[in-house]
Length: 209
Image (cartoon, rainbow, N blue to C red; front, side):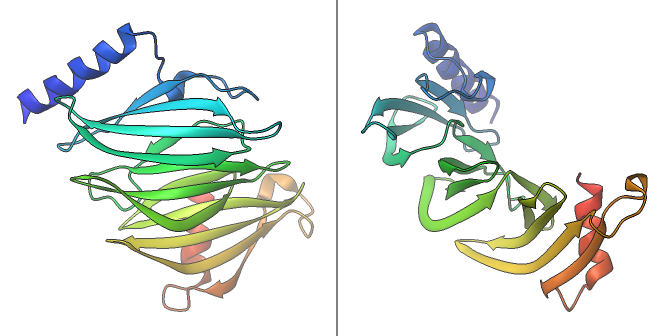
């Protein structure tokens, strides 16, 4: 395990020496720089992202995934209108990070393509998430916060088990009905979540702000 992690670190170092920065250290911009990411855990992969103009609004992202020893694992391509960079996050807590590729960004919210991390690489899915933040909250559950207005937002809760993604609850947070903003927003359950209940999901959301 130590030798495997060391090989991954050396691989990342070699990539960096070729002039490719880490994606998560770059500032968001209309024009992207080619960059790399490295997964954590026992099944380490190096991901490199090459950006090229597609038309006057979009760029093509060509993603190459290699194992720690440099062996090609897979390639993927995406078209993006977002100024953000791809990112990694272990959304289901299994020790293997998922790949989030931004496809389009509006005034605030971004649509992300979700590829699920496995020991062999990434399993591309048709799942798309929309919001300004994607954060794991434990026990295979993660939340996606999306702005509805300047004073309100929706938060969707998802459970990721294997390749199955279930939308298990939606809550609404708003300051419109609050007299003192220091008291925090009002929170209500608008869909799903009947088993755990409103207080449970509101608590998760408020604890992850």
